[in-house]
Length: 305
Ligand SMILES: O=C[C@H](O)COP(=O)(O)O
Image (cartoon, helix red, strand yellow):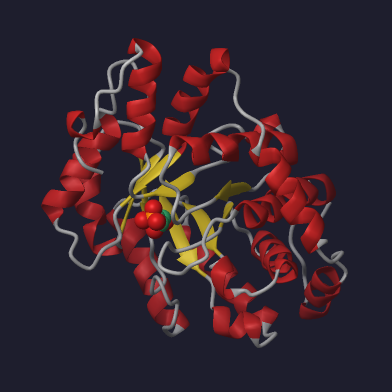
């Protein structure tokens, strides 16, 4: 089975051949799944799984080396007996700081190369940004697609950019951010998911966290369907990363239910599902503590996200 397409004509044929998304159906199914709760006896394991899936993120203009070091400390020392997070996610110029702070911890180092968050830069600049981040030690690259080109129907340009960035990644994993809040329709979300996967994405990611709406339940559902169908039709497993506005344990656990029910249990693994979040970890740790001791320790007990 072919994972990738070999011509622009084939790319358009595959993308236009995708069935349209039943918007009402997607919203209704997402809402139905959101009413399902994780059973109490499985909750502790689900919270630990969610912790291991967090891409602990700081993407502010005011980020400092000290802030990144503190974030890395938190990524590793979550709570006694708790797993580390999946990765920290930082701007490219702070990758070296994270590499030093996370040496020998097994925590991934993700970086938002490619002129994040707008993606508005010449390809050569995006490739240089990517290569430098990888050279500095990033193990995962979160690239943004060119939404302008996508919305203008120039799928070949978006495809070529993703394949070029994938090439520049070398051994680093590539997460492709669709910025679904700017794609306007669920059909676009499905088509952009397929485009990214055909171009070689290791993960498809909803959002930069800078645009609303971000990781809504129906959008995540459409993307989970896309990776499931892509695996069935093309034989390659691609991960999913919702990001943006995910702040509570309740939201994270609802996502795990969606993952299991829509994509399948195989995706309940940090190698295939991540949650990009700047302020989710504390709530996961608080709920974990509450489950173990019966009492809330309060937000002051934990360092700030
Ligand atoms: O990639 C991750 C996002 O930037 C995080 O967004 P957030 O600050 O809303 O959690």
